[in-house]
Length: 279
Image (cartoon, rainbow, N blue to C red; front, side):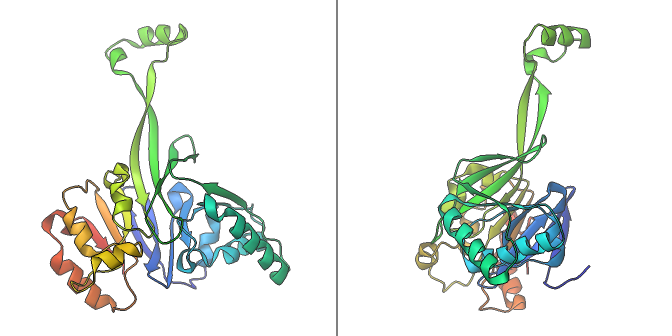
């Protein structure tokens, strides 16, 4: 398989996390076991096998490769993909694909679906995705993937199988759905985007931006432009219940070794053992 773009891989809790992210360059992620991806700032060749993509916002480093991805799937005779974008972007994204169709002379076919904060998307019987508002300079949303299963209601626990069967046959629902947030992907956001949706802090895996980290960076300016500073995460260290936090989207102004050294040095114990810098 071709490897035409950088991709880092991590195995966590039965999931394979693949992707790359640097600010103003490109961000793209996928989780094969969930059959979904997040953002398309770039499109590694083998990502075309993932047919459902959730895009957080329309900045080039998060969406520029959308036409490439759609065209490659058509070229390989795959079914049209399903692309979720903020609802405000649907009309212009559709227009963009039609313009590329005229330029490329190849059909740009996909299921383009707009989402609003609070929407719920059925992935499968086992998984559902919810959207939440993030805080950026353009319309933006984040996504939480939930696992769901039906469990016996507390009032029926301890009954025999025959008793539960009889209750069910009488028309009474004996089970209730239980959900667990397993993956949260924020895209670009100021810290308000985290605070406004509590499941962000509860997901087993949180993939969130950490664009700036130097002490001299002015947080008020960073927040104005819809980004997060290391200080923001440190201030919230007691809120994170995530088993793993992937920090991504670091500024391209600084080399990898400098970012790693500076951030790791400042991380408090509450975050150090759970945070992975995606560099």
